[in-house]
Image 1: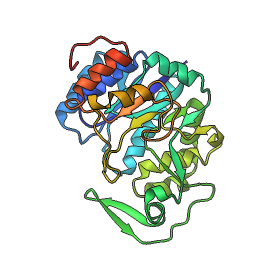
Image 2: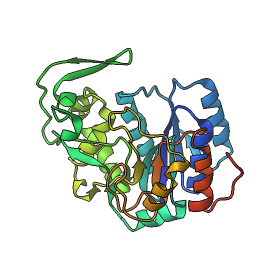
Image 3: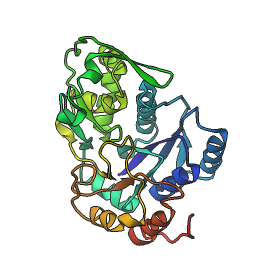
Length: 296
């Protein structure tokens, strides 16, 4: 048993490839935003050609808050399931994630969770998403125009059978759970149309579809990635550094509530190739047992 990982990248090619190296020999499928600078694509494409366990996905524009993010993720999921029948789970990560435990331990953990998917989620409406509980994201008609939100007040009705959940755009799906999600997106165009006109659909689509499908009882509400928010009002989580060593060490060995409750944190986000350079080397040496030269 093993796992496959879909990585959504738009910058930091060295970090994305370093992540792929730490997941070896498990398959890694990298999607590079088609709007990323050419040097990012060139570096990842060149690095991929030298790594037998890594492949590139067809590129598309994956702007923030766009439905294309969901399409890129699910296209990677579909390809991973089709091309790698040996994997028990498919993970979605960003190019700025990094493992906190060795790949072999991730495999062992997932093997012990046969059929289980891990998706942080909360049913809507939820106080986590403001005064309207996030219902403005789904009841109004939402569009992206020039990178900005345009919405028309409405009273859209949720399609039959679809229960609305918010959550993280990053997930771990079992083979069965992933197949169920793809089946529902393919056979329920009413669900897809509804979700694609929601605001920030990447935080709605997979939680809602997975928890409305036949495999919903196998979805575990745990976030296996450590994400730290010093400022809850910020649009982005903290960039992690050596100052976070104690938190990361504890999370890699037992229960943690940083970024959401979980019995263990397998990954951490957000890393930066410059500000997190010393931390990445420390993780390699102290948590992953990998000896590398500084900054490699």
